[in-house]
Image (cartoon, rainbow, N blue to C red; front, side):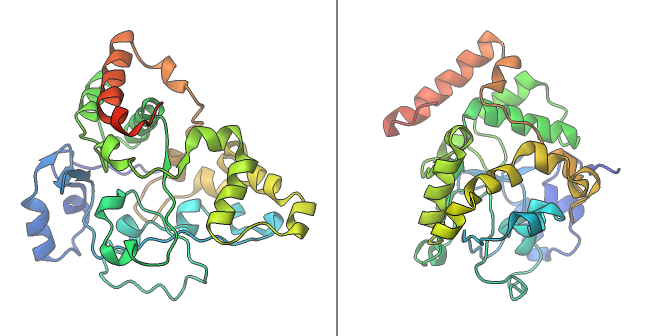
Length: 278
């Protein structure tokens, strides 16, 4: 299978996107850049984007017939800034049945006022920065998007130079935490469904639908589906690259004591004022 390659010296979308307008290309070229990232309003963005709308809504579907069994999750939950609005300022959303579910890596502060003032539900999921960093580094090295050593990549991460970073500015408005969801999936699935206005019915509870969803969305199940073992995204990324087991605390297998201390100082400096601990 092919792996997407890119020139790390240029902003990512300027390399692959001949359909961008000259105005957009000129705007991207005017921004500060580092490692194919562009800095906009204090955040490092790996793509061009226009007029974003974000909403999280949920469907209750029989797990035995769920489209996730034959489609990659990135197809079912398209990314607004990287896919839908990347080449089209007004994409056609009529193909998406109500209720609509989208994703984005953009921090809350960069979403337009129309989104913040709307009735759509926004869910933010954060993860321990140590495991977040290791996962990001694995993903980028799988796709040959970086040749940085773990130590050099951590230096940049702690300076805020990472996709959609700085990490600490992106996680100020946290609703869910990865570690909590993994430890108690049923509890947090119910919490999330209620927040989205789609609580589980007594009939679904009787059928143990929550645990069915947990099994459907498990790493072992999704990573072994044929669509995820052999499929390729519309951006040329093999779906296998999106799968990393993501064990809680897996970072201990990668960090030296010096790296732990560096990231600990970053966490203390940026999160102590809001009481967020990892």
